[in-house]
Amino acid sequence: MAGTRDIKGRIKAVGNIERITRTMQLIATARFQTMQKRATEAQAYTKRISEVVSELAANLGETGEVSNPLLSAPKPAVGKHLVLVISSNRGLCGGYNANLLRTAMKQIKGGDSIDLEVVGKKASGFFKFAEVPVDAFHGHITDKPEYADVERLAENYIQAFTDGKYDSVKVVYTAFVSMSRQEPKVLQLLPLEPPVAAGVAEGASEKSGGTGGGPMTVYDFSPDPEELLGELLPITVKTNLFQCFNEATVSEQLMRMVAMKAATDAAGKMQKALKRKFNRARQSSITTELSEIIAGAAALN
Image 1 (cartoon, rainbow, N blue to C red):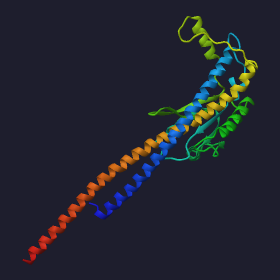
Image 2 (image 1 turned 180 degrees about the horizontal axis):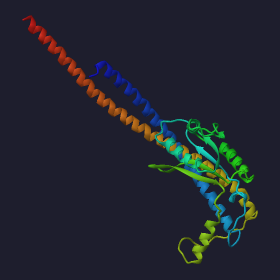
Image 3 (image 1 turned 60 degrees about the vertical axis):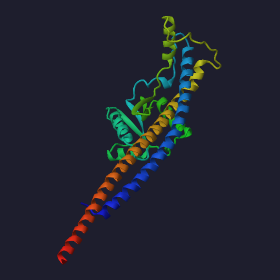
Image 4 (image 1 turned 135 degrees about the vertical axis):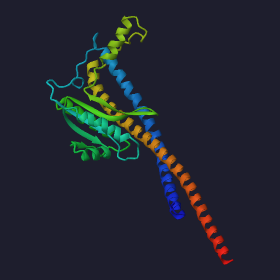
């Protein structure tokens, strides 16, 4: 059995770890609440932009067909795709990075030619170790992404896509589904899904007498809908990418909060076990000393 001094040292070390993990849990909780509020506000804006785009598409004509370079892949196909992986800069967040990078590797090994860009030191280190070439590392985007940084990144992607360099631009990130569920997701940023679906579906529901929605509102637009779409579709790309960054950050902080709580609880349980072990060792030491004293006294008699 280990000596009481060794056990006491381990108890102290575990206590220090418990204080550190508890502090990290509190910090992650505060950051999670801040980022969740920010992501929720941005999500409302992103959703409203999509609704406006659908209304514009529905008012372009009976079919609602829209012609825009952001809505269709280059023809002929160039056989090249761009993948952006959004990871964290720090660890201690459970399986956040492992699950994300596993999903990213499936995209990279799909067989097509891939240009890989990463955000976060964990992804950069992983791909370097795996000997996967990284075309760009966006180290200037921090754990609290700013819209201006994301906007510049989205503009570069839009320019490259419209120039015909890529068939698609995809983002691999961790989506925040709920407090108990965060899952890696692959979002096709470009080309955008045609916005005619909402308008056509609504019209079909109305014609068939369904109860899925009321009659479609008709608007007068100035300037014309096509010009407005030309302005709104790039904004849609930017807001979608910004929402990916926000959800990734929220998921990271939540998973770190959960991981640090589990570590704190484990340290507390280990402390209790070590204290019981310390008490047994101390009792055994006292019993041994008493036995030696009694034996010595008996020998003198």
